[in-house]
Length: 356
Image 1 (tube, helix red, strand yellow):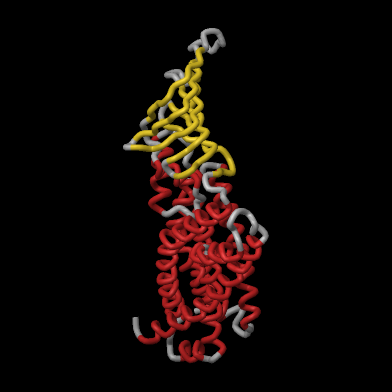
Image 2 (cartoon, helix red, strand yellow):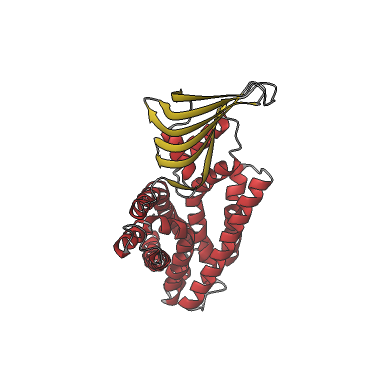
């Protein structure tokens, strides 16, 4: 990498940083305005909304990173073209493939930053923001829906999750060897202690093997213990969204579901999307280069921004469609997660070769 390559990388990344600052500021302002109407619940005031919005900024940047990369490259290479520096480079024998390679190197640096952002900073910030918001609202432990988990012969339904190791209003369904229902236990309180769940306030209904109601017994127990693969880490993974989970977290969640013979297709696709995301950022930057020297050669910054936003929206829709169709038709996870990126990469290389 010589001085010219470093200059292109520096120019592209400088404009990308400005685009990131602008888009994240707008996104954070939208989050702040949308949450300001929730003030008044418990101790959730304006300062808490501001704290929540600021903690969500790393996650917001991760969501916007592909379009930030595209717009940054369009403006960065466009600035070189507008000042005739790009023309001078090409007149001195620098090919478009060489300029594309330098832009791709800038994309690799941004993609590596995106991986750190999506695997550590984003999840940590969003988890902390959600926890602080729920505590301020007095909603700590509430779930939007019942959480269902399976571990061998036990199926758990959790209605209130106080903490990762503390739940209330739990129902434990136990199946027999044939898959029929043999026991139903309602639990008032469950705590994870020393590798097992200690459940108190238990009302157990024993069901007969033939499925008839005769012979059904109801007993009350002070405490029962349940061991297995449902740990606080598993609970934490299930209540988080795929965009908040780290690569390691998604991998552990997929392993848990496969061990319990559950459909892990959706989470497997989410895992591959996390892995493909840095490549997507690189491809977005590469895709911008032939646009600047071709269709948008004489366009202003506003036209380039509009073109970048349109391409970003189309790519976002294609990504969503690919994931949904892949989940529906059971495509291999790498194909469902990476097909739009692969198509964009082929189109970018083809246009780059034509521009050469």
